[in-house]
Length: 73
Image 1 (spheres, rainbow, N blue to C red):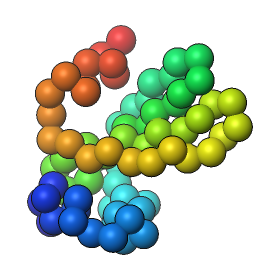
Image 2 (cartoon, one colour):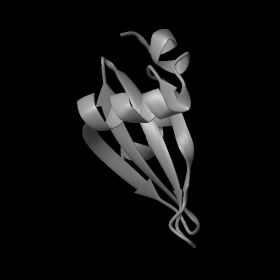
Image 3 (tube, one colour):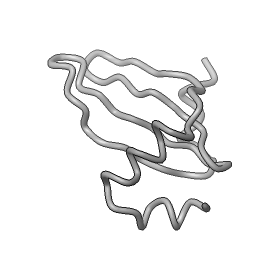
Image 4 (cartoon, one colour):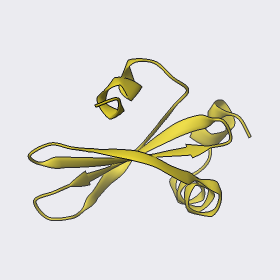
């Protein structure tokens, strides 16, 4: 599966693929946001959480670029 196929899945199916095939790769936390980074099928998926109430805000899938910079520290 490539990035575009993943992005075209229904949200529930994206979550299923991420939890079944994804590998944890790192995290980033700010005052009100926590992001966990996973790799799956050769691309990256971020899972965003609201740190104030623990709710899941969503996921973002991407291949590379500036989004990875926050994990370098």
